[in-house]
Image 1 (cartoon, rainbow, N blue to C red):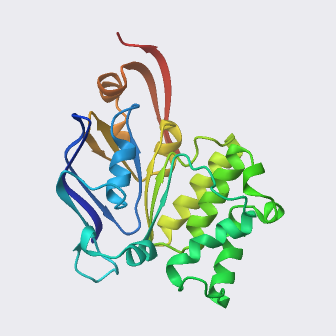
Image 2 (cartoon, rainbow, N blue to C red):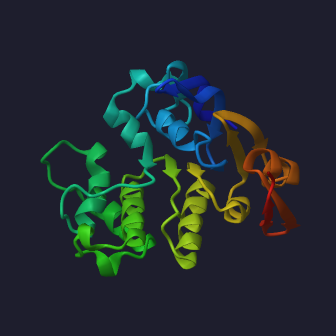
Image 3 (cartoon, one colour):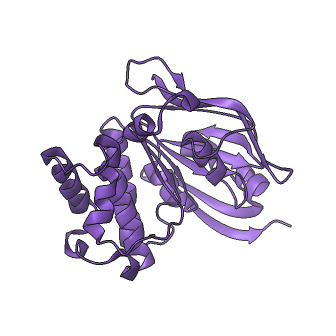
Length: 265
């Protein structure tokens, strides 16, 4: 598979603390990749570096803007060009203005037209599709500052889909959701990958990560310690070494079920 987004020997430190340590990562079209690891492993920082929101101290992030284009350094591409190709879904975001849901979702179309220009037919179609697949039609006129945490998270995801990006970088996209909507969001992201898109999502639910992701990347202290199919990554040894837990690992046809037993002190 052709690599479309990659991090090469990326290092990043904050206040003297190493967050990412010479990290290498390559993503291809058609992949849904789960980025897993304990709190403080560097998952959010890696996503932000790959989205171009943080500058690495060393190393490079390269992006192919089309399937057949040569990879270019992310730093040489303009913001609008990057935003047309990939979208970043933050772990938490507080709306700055009391917009209606459909207007916030519509901001996902910003990379595709000039400021202050009206919405095109393509814009309207993309917004309607995003509202439909995220099941937000009934909330379209709600003010976003009145939404629950889960409703807001779905609205932000709809904004991502409205922009029709090829690559989606999502930081804990199911953290604020109930089980129904956790499954719904994972299904939407998996469908995006099945249709030729690329997804990299930081996840804490290991069982859902194993069920929906074709590949898992296990990050620990800013380094990748395992990268492969879920059954190869979610071993009892890795769970003990990285998470500090003893766990029951049940491999099934529809995924891997993880049942934590106890902490390993």
